[in-house]
Image (tube, rainbow, N blue to C red; front, side, top):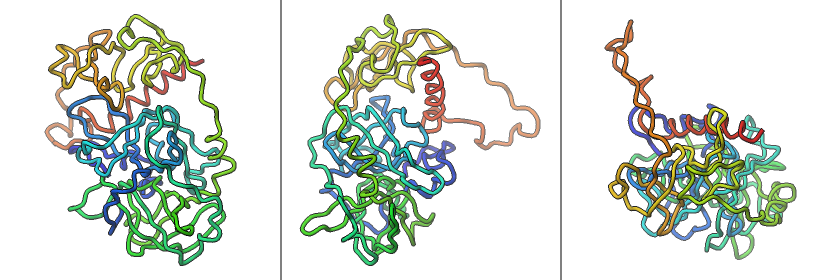
Length: 380
């Protein structure tokens, strides 16, 4: 799991307590350089310098523009939150230069998902553009291969429970199927085990000469030692995966120019360029913006903040020569309030319980919560 700086919560700590043991690198695993169809789900990046990716989960590419992951991976930011996927062996502490990013345009959790039991803990993500990667073949019926004692391969970017092998690197390991249920199956270590950050990652079984996607990692014991709970992919096909894959592309809608967002208003997200959100602040007109930035214009391409004068070098797209653009807010931010001296028994006690850091997933989650409320009011 990605660790934030001191006193800031990790993504795992922001999840509901029932999910902390379920955002499941692989314990006792090895590198998986050839599994390009296994991707990392991350929070959408805002800045072009000084920002490490925030690892949320793992996912499996099942079509050039569709990723299957766990529904609880959307718990922090919600289905409308800003997400990207990463294709590459190494994500953290910094992505390898040959790695690629893709923006998520739509996230749909399974309609029967139960956060308490992890029943149908699955979600589908639509990407803004197809990836040049061969998708994983789906298990049409896992009955023949999915039996107790069968060997399975699990892949993910999660925790290893090894201080020398940090999360954010794609790894693989072997499990043994222990118990099979109508819509899920449990697995035991052989010798590997999925762990925090592997949630949504594939569990692969042999089907003749090939591997097929038989399950998704969704839960397990806190220590990542004894058991993994996995959702069966064949139980998701008819009512969830196949209808999504068969959907016709949404009709194109003209979008506002990214260089004149301060002078234009929006009524819905589809009018915003590059997947920005249409946000109404305090009942005002809708403006296209990134959730972690205020409304503003995106100008010339840039490599760092120094190229942008009084603005910042913001990430408008995940990748490409024009991904990073100089961002100028429509209005100057309000001045910081004067700090108040602590009073009472807490004065001089130190600690950091009430001192949020300047960034990280905690602040991002707070900003996104406010944006979600504003977006709801804008659509009424």
